[in-house]
Length: 168
Image (cartoon, rainbow, N blue to C red; front, side):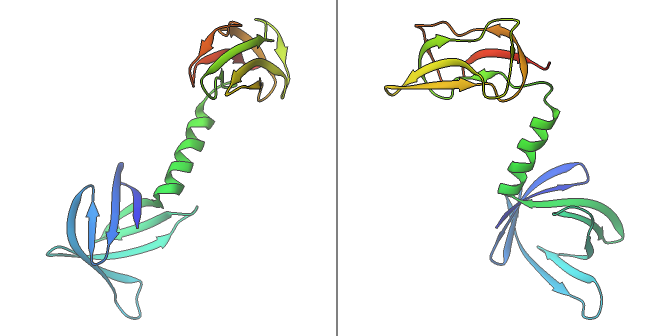
């Protein structure tokens, strides 16, 4: 199992592979033993032994960890969950509506957007033909059109910005 671990300001990739652990590409033998009747665990990494106490601390994947008497805040997530959180964080930090982009290569058939126009969620802005089908590309939410790059009759590549939008 592969995890992405944020610890002490560093992001590490940790993969558990049988009795080995691979930390940022470095493989070493590892084991984790419980000290009966205590929250203490003994972590063996190669020849080193560390005393570890960990407890959940907040949201999923967040832990308060004490390693050999040194306290750390850690977040350990599987690859998929980490990727989802990174995408969500990136979209939260973006300001205003995202530009309308071509979802696939195709031919611009019609341009329905005009600079300065206020658009509503679901309003068609550009029609692109791809694989012999016309696709209406619509506004995700209310916005003002700030620029129109799409031109009827021209070919566009996947990801090309067709219409730029700003918050109302």
